Structures are given as structure tokens and as C-alpha cells.
Image (cartoon, rainbow, N blue to C red; front, side):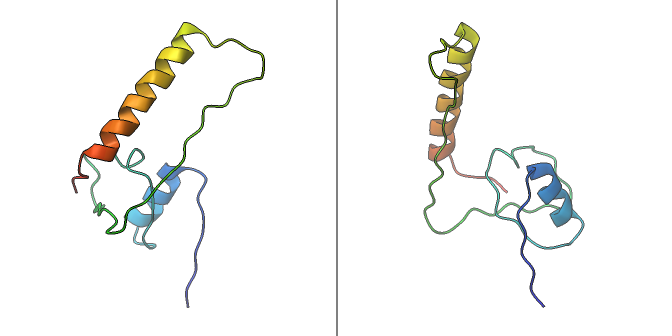
Amino acid sequence: MQHSMRGRFAQTVVSLVRHGLGVALIDRFSVAEVYMPGIVRRPLKEASCIRSYVVKKQGRVLSSFAEYAITQFRKELVLAATEPLSS
């Protein structure tokens, strides 16, 4: 028998894996925690692409904090794309 599912929250999916209920395909930010007993992280062999979007209300000006957060998030994405995933 084979089952598949989608999880809304990464923590839920990681918990299911930790309890031996299967494997998960999940983004590296959701498993970035160094100490994860019972979990082994493996990078995909194939290249992958995830598109990310910033969503805001049309006509609204973003706060300086929001602009800063977007800039920092972009930097993190670039860094994540260039550094290898450690297990």
C-alpha cells in the first residue's frame, strides 16, 4: 500500500518523518535547525527551482522594515542557492 500527502506546516511534516511515518520533500529553510534527532537531511541529486513571491496590497507603500525584510530574505535565498546542504 502507498499513500502520499501534503502538509501545510513544515513542522508537522518533519514530525511525521521523525515518528517513522515516511519521508518528506521539504525546503532547506524548514529543516535548517542544527539539532534534529532522528532526522537525516539529503539534498536532491537533480537541480530544483522554487519560485518565491512578495505579496502586498496594491497601491500600498511598504514600510522600511518590510523593505529591509525583503532585502534580507533575497540575500538568504542567494546564499542558500550557493552553499551545500549539510546533513
